[in-house]
Length: 304
Image (cartoon, one colour):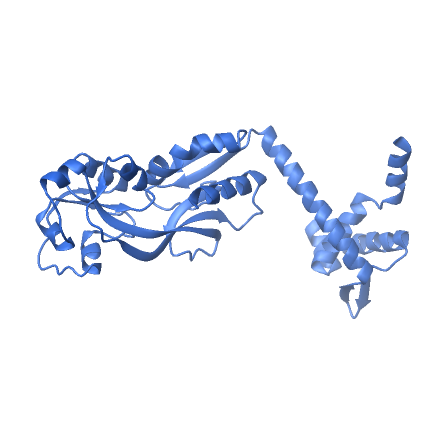
């Protein structure tokens, strides 16, 4: 075994030389490689020449101050890039494990309480070493500024700084407690004008309210809506409906658990489907850690 290791060390070029070659091949420019590595351009070109001499093959074609990889250069670059990528991933994973890696996840309060948190036992069973820091915001935060790794967000998907995986289309419907509906039956959307309505006012002015929902379903509005309670949190709106305070708008996914448990019921069959979708977001700026990729894969599977 020791003989094999000595032979391997003797046959491989130096790691330093391979690093300089990889940067040069990536940029196709010795000066840019030198700038990235904080060394002189002559040191880079000299190291590459030594590597070519050791291998017995030119790795670059040098014409009119332009670098082009030769066939052998392309082979070596592909191999070195894979190797360095694998090393970087392993080092990152070891470092994260040593720091007791914590994944920072952001979503709305209702998404956390009604969808994410009930699924965390399955997450622990699937990824037992992963620690999750769940942060709830009433506004969509800057992920980079807040150190957020993964976010669940509703929108149109037009976020140039983030990778977005589309999950569910926005579906909105009227909900109430079973007791309220038993005492105040409904037959059609226009009947809502004679009922107590709980209005969720989105701080971002992003979510649809009762007026928009009713108009989308063809109900003509001639006066003020019978809003008896106004809240600025969709979870509170859902809980108020559960308590029998009136009718609220519910969103598919975040209202599903309460519906399944019978705490609320869908008051009318009509459902408004918008062009908005819930997404999983991750920052584009850096290659995601293994823990992030595993969590995103788990989230995606749970959402299907």
